[in-house]
Amino acid sequence: MKGVIVKKAGGPNQLELVDLPNPQPGEGELLIRVHAAAVNRTDILTREGKMGYLTNPILGIEIAGTVVQVNGESSFSIGDRVMGLVNGGGYGEYVVMPANRAMKIPKSLSFEEAAAIPEVFLTAYQTLFWIGKLQKQETVLIHAGASGVGTAAIQLAKKLCDAKIIVTAGSKRKLAFCQELGADVLINYKEQSFVEEILKATNGRGVDLILDFIGADYWEKNLASIKVEGRWVLIGILGGSELEKIDLFTLMSKCIQLTGTLLTPRSDEYKALLTHDFAEIVTPYLERGEIRPIIDTTFSIETVGKAHTHMEENQNIGKIILKVKE
Image (cartoon, rainbow, N blue to C red; front, side, top):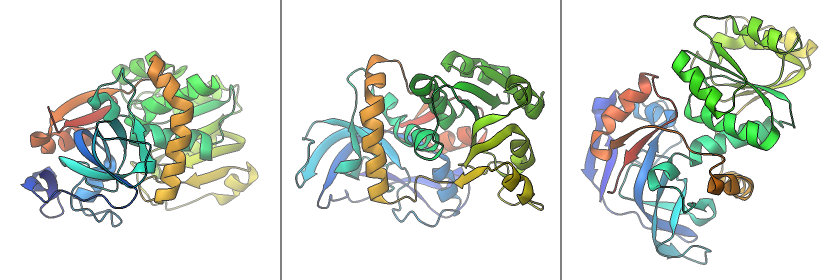
């Protein structure tokens, strides 16, 4: 089969499509013919040699495809269309996936649309509800609102909790799209003080929950934007991972719950439970089209380097997809 590997840590030019043996499913696993995979920040960090916990030489952590082999008892059969998270190997023609992490693709969705769901929607669901404990009609601040996770989080927060949603993004185009998905307050971080806008929108109280992709650069601003006893979930460090000065007293005096999380290094058991919970709650919305995957651009697997470059340019709204099988 064909699969994308990294020749050596570095830029997109280090990605290479090569011939590799087909993977073999173990007990409780499915062998899937991959039709589409999605590009994630994790893939770029792995390509750069900054991720130490992925051992599969083939990149890719989420896919959509068709079951071609079932090893052990399973609710899935050969020919089923499935989507889900894999432990690497997504940028290949075939991949193995634990059967308890597979989700059936709604009939209304294409393989490309399905590949845009697992990582970002599971991350958003985990962050909003498992960790962030978002409640009905609370106020949530979603940074990087036009990103894959951001577009998923806006829809989930609105449909499942009727939340008041505040988003930040860097262009009018991105903010307009966030509004279409359900965002209520739109902040261009390049032109506005998001602290001032948030306090204005919340009558000075601050937000109940922050989904923070930025990290260090937004530390002080997030502290000022969150309400007393608010929850703050750190899921990205696009703005840096180290702080020269941390005001722990403000964190304590406002009784803030600060939690850091990543999904990819979580255990297979955790991912299986999260997948099951998400599928049970959200699949009906996907089937009715009330929640939808957002695709920015689709690239062929042969142009994977261009796909990585496109993500690194930060111009995308929603997901970047690799088409593996016509």
